Amino acid sequence: MRPLSALLPAAAFLLVSACGCKASAPSAASSAAPSDAPKAATTAAAPAAPATVAPVYGYSVVAKYPHSTDSYTEGFLYKDGKFYEGTGMEGRSGIQVLDPATAKVLQERKMTSNFFGEGIVDWGPNILQWTWQTHIGVAMDRATLKPLHTFTYTGEGWGMTRDNKRLITSDGTATLRFRNPETFEEIGHIDVKDGDKPVDQLNELEYINGEIWANVWHLERIARISPKDGKVISWVDVSGILPASEKRDDESVLNGIAYDEAKGRIFITGKQWPTIFEIKVGPKK
Ligand SMILES: [Ca+2]
Image 1 (tube, rainbow, N blue to C red):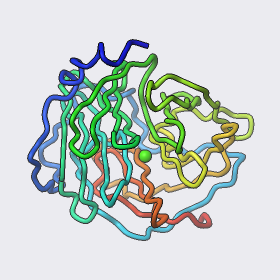
Image 2: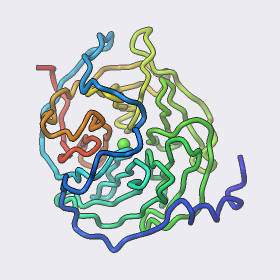
Image 3: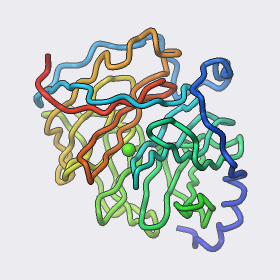
């Protein structure tokens, strides 16, 4: 991998602006349909969930929080009382720090318009964000969102999370990769399977109590995955949690899982959803 110092100037290129930040009143008025096709064309809003081997659980909603319908959610985490959200789409990508109660944008940094932002992960005092198909990511100071250095990788960038030793990343396939948090180099991987069947399109990730939780692109289902062997331990079916009438389009899909480790709270949201849901896993109704 290229030495990080050689890539330093690119950090300023990748991230162009911080903001003084206004309250983000969730609004659907400002965004026209995206001119660049998101990851793939689709016409089916909610395909039937496939049969599974692992048990399927349901959910109950504990609380609801506001979420901006302008945010094309690609990365989502909870840290020190705030939500951190990475957003995608060229021209709309960046990272925001949000007040959970009000959705007020406390801090923000935007990417230049040629980048499509993807997952985010905190590591020590830093926060990392990578991009979909441009093979470059940026490490920022978490307190200020000031870019520190960039890093590169092969393949696509989708979701990111971590355990206490490694970063964990998805790329739209059934493979999750473990990475050195300092160099971003791959140090191992698992192939995710439900029974014998690979589970691909793994997207936004969250490490929760020794499991990797991953939502599957275009399904309202979360896989709970063993980090040891990639086996799907169980599924959480959140079908219908956001009424179809509140989804902007076919790409307004589930794509955000965040965990408040101190209080054991699990939050989920999706691309351009108006709501962040705190959920509890329970029997499927
Ligand atoms: Ca997450």
